[in-house]
Length: 156
Image (cartoon, rainbow, N blue to C red):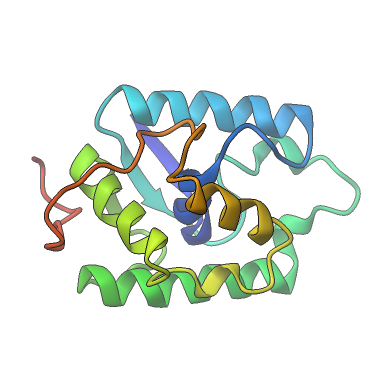
């Protein structure tokens, strides 16, 4: 499966516990999270609205185009590029294997890739989820693994 994701949504996946902007958004996010959980998923990085945003695009004022959201994407891209030693930009494809997800989740928990979260309305909720070791999230829980970076471009 291929899912189109804006960069900061790679981070949002780790703390998603079934809360969101609208019931349609939450339902869509749950479906995508379930598909990612069930097997290797190819994430194609996009600029602007992605597959998670689709239920919100019909709204008169869609926040998906707001400058603050674009800033979150830029911050997330910088953090992830530094962590993965690879440019994370539109068109980049990442295989979201369990190893890659664990590496990203661990770095998220350690605060290494959270600069995109600074002005986000969901930050307090995400902080609580991290403090609770990701309990209740729809993706896999944090497990002990090596701290070595994983190449998300490889087919493992």
